[in-house]
Image (cartoon, rainbow, N blue to C red; front, side):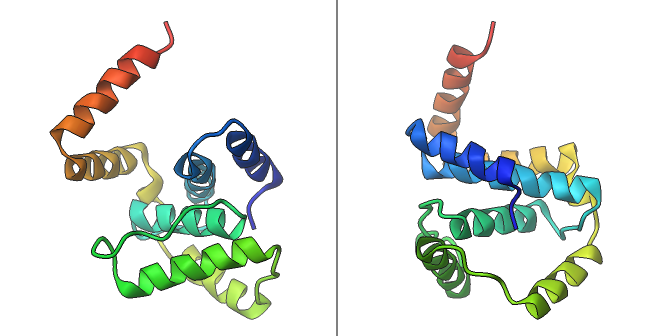
Length: 147
């Protein structure tokens, strides 16, 4: 269950008209914090991101499932299930399943949330987007950087 502060920050982002991916970013950040604190582990940064996105969808963030061809059918189906659960309202998770997932995640490593692993993941996903997109992102970062 996401912390109240995280949900509030995501709601604030929604009120400011920010994109659903920005709102979901709060949940992903929380997930990385959980791994760093030792609450549980993750096999890879991608797993931690996936957990965060799932929590975001279930919390009501209108984040659509990934497009066909980018991920497996199973992942897309799970994402759409999460999205519909988020739209339905607060559905309490099964205690038995919740315990099993927590126990499995506790056995995983903690290094997937290290700064180096996260930056590697960010670079890897940026490389997929293409040079123009990276260039535009860098220009925007330079424009909006605090001076």
